[in-house]
Length: 502
Image (cartoon, rainbow, N blue to C red; front, side, top):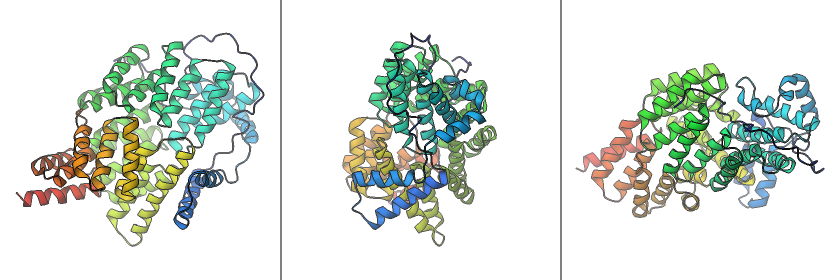
């Protein structure tokens, strides 16, 4: 592994090869910059989700197109054309708008929102700059990952299409399409786009990383490992190192994953890289039950970027696992107020349930309703959310819907995560005998996750495999005793029953 770092974890526009000849003049179709509405603030977005969730509770007849229309109206209420914003951005950050392209997303000192505004201003002034259109599309994808606004994906799609219209087959836009498809959880398409980009430019870091991501999410772990080795040879750096570490973790080699992430942190050049890698280390250590170490990594991440939401979420989860429930609730409330994604929403709801103070049950139900609202919005934005639906609904919603979603996701891609989701959905639907092979498959690669082990143990207990259930539940609690405020308690109760029955 080379210690050199080339790019921020936010990704790049992929300007790695000489540009071919200029494309013919683009069509006069409306531009993705000119027709983009103002993005709502985090408070506006959360309020919109709450209003939508309330509307669904009042009228269960809202489905399909009606959901999409209501959400679109709610999420863009008061939006204006971005022309004024673009002119303001051009005045506020002229250096960025003149230096668009991969470097805008590489530099850790450039905020993604600033980059997007500046790129919008640039493509309005220079609409034939295919590289800037590609960078704008990728920036919208990366921003959607962090702010939980899937409506950005349509804007990204338009910008990438414009780039390809200007320069057909350019690797920057193809790599952007790979990132977009991955963000929408269409991993087969992501792999195809990444392969096409790499045919044009074998050194495109974004395409190399998207290829690893797609193979991992399709459950093709051996191929993902080879892809990570190729990427490390061609473009060593933080984005590749972190993916290499995750592939090792999925194979059960946590020490190797830890070593790689520490080397990546040593090579991190800017605040964005430090925040990204330190958070990855925090997540790894938290999953191993090393909460103090995890909290130190999250602190380092937040010292580099005090607004980095993944670090805040990780810190909240580590606080909860380490017994600081009040601190965890306060931190998660900050996270969901800015980015109402399913993971932190469910975690906050469970913490409310676990605290069980007056009004907490209602607060928990609101978080779960927001998950439903977000998944409806995501579907309207073209995102496959069946895995999110299965995981949330199995414990906090409609078990029949959880099973439908888990089966659909399993039919698309066969990973340890989809195997676990299907196993748990089957168990919660009262079909534990069918669930057991999937639970075993989820733990077959060597990947050690306390939630997976808990699910397997509960399924083994339900099917009369008491000895195996004791082993699985014990392993879950020894690995990560605070993996979930509710399920860790359930695991301890189940283990107590099993021990009493011996």
